[in-house]
Length: 261
Image 1 (tube, helix red, strand yellow):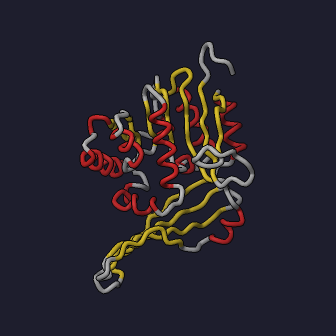
Image 2: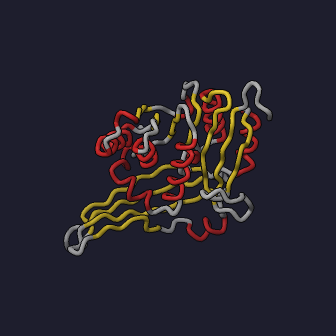
């Protein structure tokens, strides 16, 4: 069971509260349109990126560990009229078993859900095996900010609020508890539904672990698994990566015969 199973119905409102949501979608949409061949998105979720690409004529294979998330994605693809351009599979990225992929993406910080170094090495190894010669692997993550984390440790953050004039609506909160020594955090998502008088009539919590990944680890993994680093950006607009960047956006390439490394 995936911890996202319980989040499928409110994932989109929750994700929309993250400032990286729209810029990351635009980045991966552009990347998908610019690359031919087989495109795989790991962590396809509700299909925010994949369905846009399918609507623009780009077939996508979408993979997710959560069947409820895939169910929402199927429903959204039907509503958009593109189910024939979207192939969905329930699969663990640590055990992909794919071959001949030209572009594989893991968008929107999903790499952080693989919380141990061994997990992340398994993902990199599986992606490398899945790619065709010259195939590309794109993913992103935030740059960990210790000062921000200390200031926001255990402090709820409002991610979404849609309350009508009558008071009925949906409110979603994020709360993070950090384990600085382990390089990970426990995320608590709180979903509240309000009645017409504004009172909270239901509240549910969903918790999951998450790890931050630094650029040094990515460079080490890329070298050890056999990737060339094509690009690393500090934002989703292709800005230079530096110590001041808030994001790290990677494009790795699997070297093939005849390619210059």
